[in-house]
Each structure stands twice: as C-alpha cells, then as structure tokens.
Amino acid sequence: QVQLVQSGGGLVQAGGSLRLSCAASGRTFSDYAMGWFRQAPGKEREFVAAMDRSGGTTFLADSVQGRFTISRDNAKNTGYLQMDSLKPEDAAVYYCAASPYSSGSALRGRGYYTLWGQGTQVTVSS
Image (cartoon, rainbow, N blue to C red; front, side, top):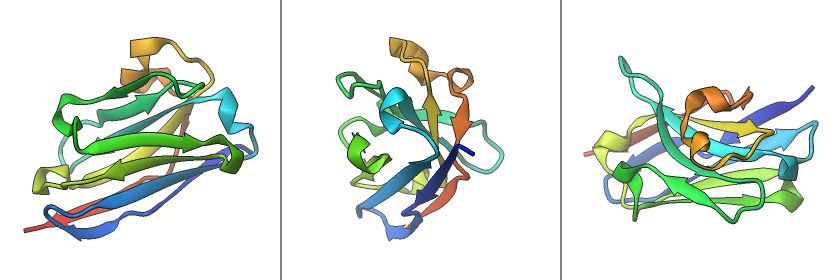
C-alpha cells in the first residue's frame, strides 16, 4: 500500500535549522508532485511549499520565502523541506503530501493532493 512516512521534526531554537523528510513507499515518487503544509493548534492547515513532478517549478508561501527550501530526490523516493532561520511562528505539525497531477499553482491547495504523510511536530523555542 502506498504510504508517505515523515521524519526530521523536533525541537529547535529560534534562528536554527531543521530538515524534514518525506519518504514514499509503494510507488514511483517521480510520478507525483509534492507539497508541504503545516497546521498549528486551532488553525487550518496552510500551504508551505510545493514542487512539480519534474522539480522544475516550485512554490513557497510568502511567510517562508527566503527561509525554506523544497527539494526532492527521486532516486531515494524522498522529498525534503529545509527550514532555516526558524521563527516561533513556524511551530506547527508539518505534513507532506503528494499528487499524481502537476498543475502549477493548483499545488498550493490542500484539495489537490491525494496522499498525505502522518505529520511531524516542529517546535521552535524562544
């Protein structure tokens, strides 16, 4: 069965860095666009970053531009979210997602994705 397994969350100090991983099993990762979303307590899940299937087009939320980087390694069936200069407001549960369709800016929407990881907690101190 197809599954996305996340890792890399944890506690980090403000200004620090963290890299989240999203490993896919049971499918060819290159066939899917990927996205990252986050959800803080009491808030809706919000878009963070996305990348099309080829890796040639990326999208970042305004709040993380210049600080976060999305990447993928199709040979490892794994996507990554590199988070630098973390702020307390970045604290949330982060979810990776995948879609068999790559349609540009539609990747910013939650409803576009058909497969979701289990989520991983990111806590930013100070």
